[in-house]
Amino acid sequence: MGTIIFRAIYIFIMAVILAALEVQIEAENGWAKNIPTWHPDPNKWYSKLYKKIMGGKELTGYHLFIFTFVLLIFHLPFFFNLKWTIAQELNIICIFLIFVIIWDYLWFVINPHFTIKDFKGDHIFWHSKWLLNLPTDYWGAVAISLILGFINDKFFNPHYIEEWFIFFIVMVILTLATKWFIKTFKPEWE
Image (cartoon, rainbow, N blue to C red; front, side):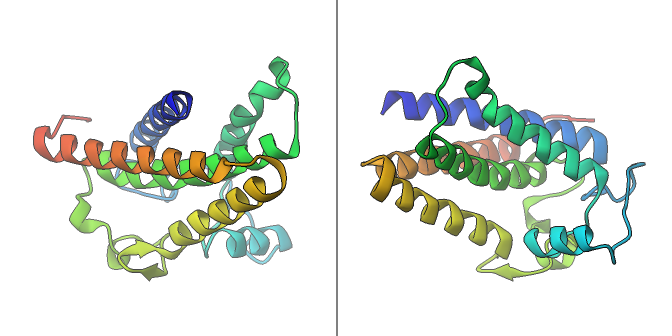
């Protein structure tokens, strides 16, 4: 269990740093709205596919490359002698999906241009669909991660689902602690 907690802490720190980096790059203009990046033709098949997979979000060069880079980082252990298995791949995908949600939410938590009160559909154009006060793509990512976790548990790695829940709970607790810290101490990020 200790390994899972340390893994969650490490991955949470990665999410905080990436969220802070994005705040520095985007400021109050989320989803790369005002940064000089590639905005492909929205009528191209790959733009439509990306938009469908990403819950209606526009494809940008910034997001394509940052998501690819992070996914490559998550696969780095395979290039340092960790043997690739289906169980390991499912684990990475499960963790990546949770990571992306936490990273995205932390952008709002630490961004001085937003408050958590602004975390709702009418303030965030790139999260267009909401359910129970959260973007539907958060729910979808958790659901896919959980389903893949159950598949991993059933066919490849018995007891994986317990690890998944521990990881998820630690990530949520760290996120809530960060939210409390930012709200309480209001550090200057600019």
